[in-house]
Image (cartoon, helix red, strand yellow):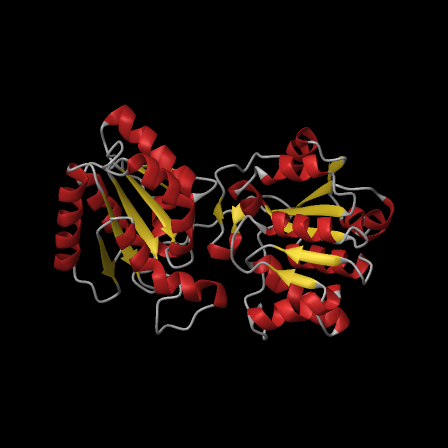
Length: 373
């Protein structure tokens, strides 16, 4: 199935707005949206709930339903606006969901997707959202029938979901771009890690940041016990780090975050500042993209996270523009009082042979807790 054809069919259904958060299962769909030259307006929102909110507003203003796309992990973020606003028992706002199915039962996937994949269809049923599952074997005729059923559902003011299995979409022309930054993320992470005191606690966000830190730690020290990898729950690494920092004030706690993750739950910043954790150091690796799931730009490329952190009440916030400044982070962690944020602009480069943790999530948790003592 070609994403470009599906997008054209959405237009025929009366949809003129597409919003969501990128997903690797939907990479070809996302590439197709980025390069589509029809009458669709596209938004990359901070989180999936925000995409539902935007879809509600778009419908109120135009009377035309919107399409919201997401990884199935994003269902959690969209439950509240869907159940308390869009549902037919409340306002009855029609919208079409395109949901990438990570962790599909019987298909090997990363540990953070296993349970979410198991309950994906059950969650949609609980939310009273009718759905159809498509894969690479879905014919054009079957897809036409699915969209016909979806259209009838939308006309009644309800929602419909298309659940997409891995490999469903054919490759589109890849969407590529450059952000103009020079420093490479993995090199930056290696410099930070080797500069930090060995007893520092490191909490990393989901995606390639955690994978690169894992490899850098093993390359430098042969282990990674001081590293808690937040392999799922995008946007929550900073609050996990805060929870550790408040319980263990004698330890230096460093949260290594991504720009897309911070955007997803930015309310954490003023809350962290209000708690005044003197042992908390927040590093935001900013490549202006959701790079781990296909490098689609975020919808907020102009955002200056250090300025936002400063306005939120962090004691110190700055942007580091050179490797010479990055090399000073370890010393600053020892000498400066938190909460502190350093924003580091990096390029979109990543290794094709980047590995994944060899231990299970539970084993990583146990090693980390032993490190904390």
